[in-house]
Length: 255
Image (tube, rainbow, N blue to C red; front, top):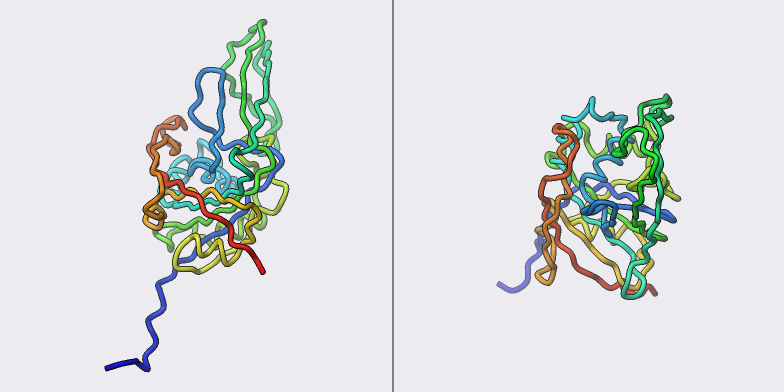
């Protein structure tokens, strides 16, 4: 029987939270060796957990279990604009002297004790290097499993529209230059959700998929393992393994 009057079934869709991370300087963290603080080129799940938690009003360590659960449910696809063959990074040389324990004003609106790795009454400066991404332009599609558990993507979208606490991209000095929330999108996969909702600017896009999103990665993708997960309920140390699929795509020319 040739031909059919019945249309093919529509592909199943999933709801994604779309966010934009754009800033003159940003840092996503990476494995740190003594005074050397490098940065990844895509946001780790722990960093995005912290960003969304700030919008929701979570506080660490009070809400450590909620942070662990949010991180456990999250899958991420991030697409970063890349110009040429290299990312543009800046290494900041820092000298720190901490003569005595201090308190400082924080995003909670009141003074709190400063956590520091420097011994009190240290006279000699502590020298360190911290890497930053310059001129960051990145978009991400986030999904949660299970989708119906609180907070839902709609809860998080509402929080990003009116954040409880200030948002920053990696370090507190890295404030976003644009609105973080882009909206919600229904699509069969995270890349489609981003492609239909976001205008890509660079000639080459670097893509990272983690969590359940790895199943959407092409066969040419390189899978790497890193300690992107944070043990929020156990001192906040990084140690949980996360698999990430990395690959590149070319931005199609627009008419």
